[in-house]
Image (cartoon, rainbow, N blue to C red):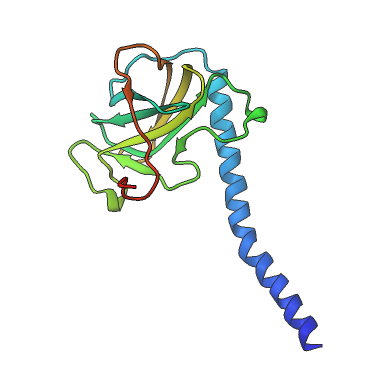
Length: 183
């Protein structure tokens, strides 16, 4: 009898412990999906922003390519920043791995001119990284944020074509095994 009650209690506790996290993930996934579809449905993309710097650094790895999307140097206070990317117009239902994002599955960050305190959610900038096996990649990016009073939301969309084989900024990066790179 004690053994059966212990097992029942264990299942009850396990179910209670996992349910809130699953519900939170499902809510975040729904938000991510809505942002993803808004990007795919958008037909007006910007080349640059009047509110921050946006640029891509690209790297050649041994069998693939890595890109870093960097958002920094804010010119206005940007609170609760959300960034979602779509790679190569990939259909949401066919995603095996979610594209890089921030502010959906993780806490919001804030970008404020001349204010840096990463511990309190005010980093110098935002860096999102992804990898590709193809030498050409198209990113569609949505960047959304709220104003100082968190009453108005701004949203901008960008279309970024990346050619990893172009000789403009490509750097070769060696990936070493081990934690300290000395092995």
